[in-house]
Image (cartoon, rainbow, N blue to C red; front, side):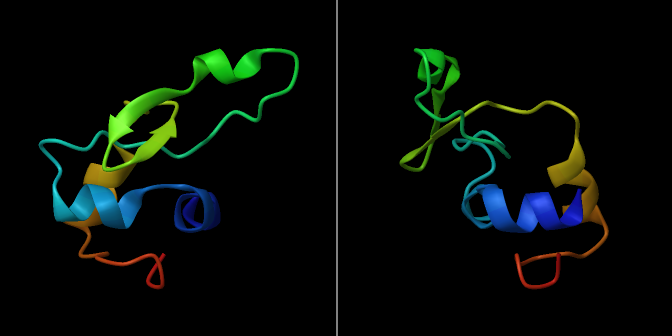
Length: 69
């Protein structure tokens, strides 16, 4: 999950403003109309909002950049 979060998420944007930017770790590609699943999570990022708590766990562990992931 660390690689996926570092490579495909908006983790650093979420760190900069966690109250207005929702955590998102995946963007659905526009194949057969599936892009309708993407939503605006803030900060100019569109994707599926996650509620697993990974971003909060990483922040509590002291991980503050994609490089550290």
